[in-house]
Length: 502
Image 1 (cartoon, rainbow, N blue to C red):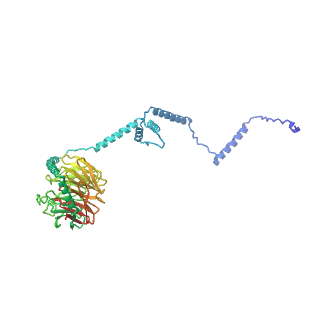
Image 2: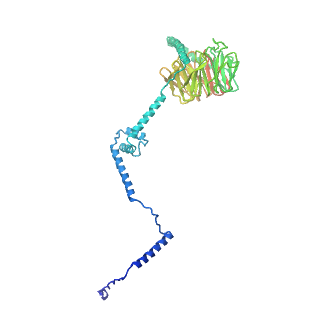
């Protein structure tokens, strides 16, 4: 070891102060306060404005939240949840929650439902189910058929219709039984002859009917007159088969939708009586006789477009279809509206009466058809199957087939005995504007469409027999003469044509 290391360190000397330290401490504090003030003024030191946080309140809030969570978990443990996964999903849907989450299993779903119920209360699910049940009952009540008290004239008309239709139905059934007794060979020969004559149909006469498109055509009961309706507002009567103009009926101011001969017009009906009815787009319906160019009566009451009129087989009643979603039945004997029937969700475009006079079929823009029993007022058949609007309907003379033409380019034939669609005819390449059965036996079906053609189909095999091509515009109406010999078609090209088998 060196000599320097052997030297002991010098001991610290303590300073001893005598007297009071108060003055020096005060000086030190004053100097510090001045520095703090200078720091505050320079913005380097931020001093709070006296806001304080009460620790006790914050702690109490946390305690309440924790206690509420414990209480919720306790309630969740007491809630019973179904083990059926379908019921659990239904419960979640009723509460407005997603029925499943990504990666969630049935057990996790049950726990989530239990958790939701612990928050909203176990009665929430019962309340939602009660509300659903109440809504379902109200919807069922809205869909139920309801009746209101009708007028005395409507009751008398229903009784009259029943007495009128029942004997006609008996005669139709007797004729069907007599037809059944005919041998199969005889029926086959007759059918072959009919098909041969239909295949030989040719354009017999073509006539320009008006300056505007011709919307409708209809034969008289004696097959010697043809009535045409035009968009110019004129209705015209033509002689058949030479197509000479007999009379122009002036009365409408807008597009005429249909003009229809009254049953027995030209036969037993007096020419001075009401022989025709027509309707137009302004809601007007007019009645005409064969002696005058002016209408003999107006039927008022429609507020919207009347697209079709149809006579009851008795000639006493007139049916009108309106775009106010309803159709109406007018009694010409008492000269009043006896029935204003709703039932379609959109406008009603066409209607047709059963040959017996017991039923009426209506087709609407809602793509549905309905068959009404005029004797009771009930809708007895609901025709559901078309994809677009129904523009035409027609009953077969056999009494149990009904044809409908639609905007979906098809013609459906309905079997009324079992209330089902018997056959769908893929008839045309555009919407069907008119369908007609052969009025004598119903052995063929005639369809007209906006593809500028009309077609003849066999019954009951529904095979095409003849395409009547010749119009330059869409075919807007077709008709078959009551004797079954002539076919008339009218078109947008302002002409009507007569077709006859050579």
